[in-house]
Image 1 (cartoon, rainbow, N blue to C red):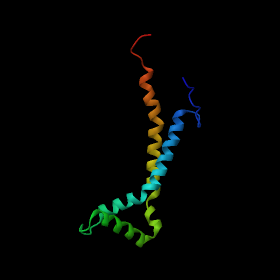
Image 2: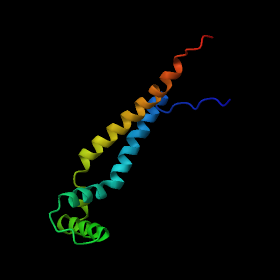
Image 3: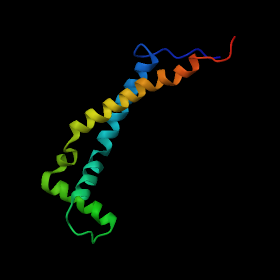
Image 4: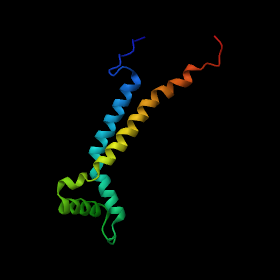
Length: 109
């Protein structure tokens, strides 16, 4: 049986938490423009006469036209805080909670 890998941040749970925070940050940066576009299309009062792809292209062009490329990341901070903290805490607690049931044995030794 292979020896367990040493923890980088002290415990495997903290390693998992850091991985979760990092995943939350990376995914938020990558998907923020699409999230912003989704919200814009949901609240748009324009008639839905275009195809879905045309609406996506129109929405992205409209965001960039009115606010520049930086506008694609409008509202990034609340999303970063929310996603990073939720993924970090999910990964932090998933390891101990998955191991917990294994520590109780109903079969006597």
